[in-house]
Amino acid sequence: MGQQQLLLIVLGVIVVGIAVVVGINLFNANAISANRDAVVSDLNNLGAMAQQYYKKPASMGGGANSFTGWTIPTGLDSTANGTYTISTAGNNTSVVITGVGTENGNDKSTKVKAVATVTKTAITVSIEN
Image 1 (cartoon, rainbow, N blue to C red):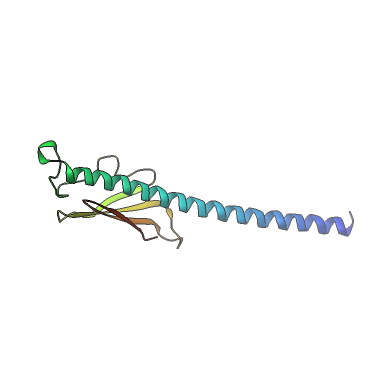
Image 2: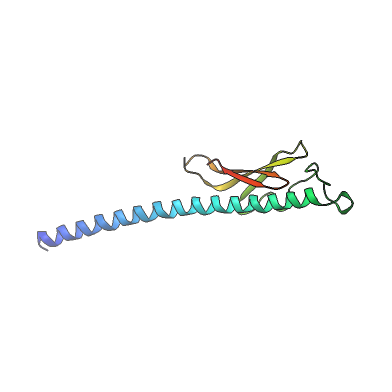
């Protein structure tokens, strides 16, 4: 082979290597974003369940205008998207649900994390990582 052919082969290998690295980085970024979106979606669903409990009369198994006594339903505290805990449930006007995802977040060392604050009329989700 001539020098020109060898140079083209080396150049081709370098271009393919760079393309593979860029592809892996894009895949990882998409996995993090998808997990974050899934955790936020789960938090919104759990928040809606908490609001239903709040509005339901005590005679029907609800909270009668209180979040006191609401727990995350069995099987929904840990899903393929992450794990969910109630970090504040002491008062009767709001509840805070924390979701920790399965993928490492933007800092690459801690998991994706989002927190939902649920009141009788609103669900506010903030993303921490």
